Image (tube, rainbow, N blue to C red; front, side):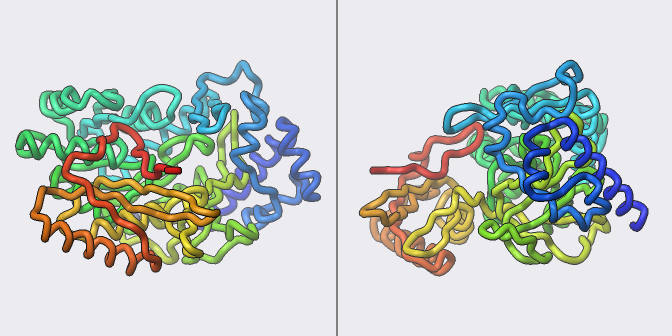
Length: 415
Ligand SMILES: [Zn+2]
């Protein structure tokens, strides 16, 4: 343990030195915080370093944060910018190697072996999801099917004919596929055993639904392109938090308002520092994802940091009459109401500066008007007791909400 600690400390010192000497923005930020690389002697000194924000990457578009020679870059990815420019991330050959190794370890944490057949139904391309899973799966020695997202009929055909045992995609796309599998009564003809679902927050209720519909163990994977891509965190089969490999990442949870580091167990914003990355290492990157570090060790025996399922993003949080509401909490509440499907969205309107929330779930089968009214009341009550604030509910008929093949759009703003 001591040895590993000093290894991570040495790696931290190395990455700080690297960005100090190669990235003017990091150097300027550190200088104004009064820190130099020689102040970083161990992991405990990390809190003296300034934070990095997504805006740092966006403002230095495309490659202002590059910490290696341009000729060493072997790959670019980019995350879609909802407002203007995308955020570009770069990888050296060693970075691609490190990423593959981190992802491969995540897959083995999930119980996947070289004998598995992994169907990657995350999007391939600029988005890191597809290629991240792909390289990790190959590194592990598993058979990888680069199906990418969409073409659902073909997904099912590939699953059946190539004997897919692992499905990797967003939970909302898994839900769409599971409905098709149920409708076609295909479950027994598919050898699926594990689902690797991520890229959007999801709930225990949806886990239960996917596990029973697909006959699998459904596990949560976490990552973000600014830090690396998928492969940052992975649930083991204990399903008690996501393991983060401390050889590659230093994990902190901070109070998003003050920046103060919070003790284990307290909920706040996840902050990540990469160890070993060359092209675009990040120092204390503010993910804006809400979670907590889980104290104690996992029953599986793995060491290192463990974080709770991501509850949502600080920027997805809605303040409804003074109460903080995350879309993921709505999903949890809806999952407890029998008679609702797992499809829903939230409508947010604003009247005189005050936000109003309408939760719009879909029912799982058509029922009588009386039963519909009862279901409406139960949904309102369930949401009220979990969120602590009363919200509007509008139930939709089965199939009314468009199925997602990637990340589901949960929040719709209405005038
Ligand atoms: Zn574990």
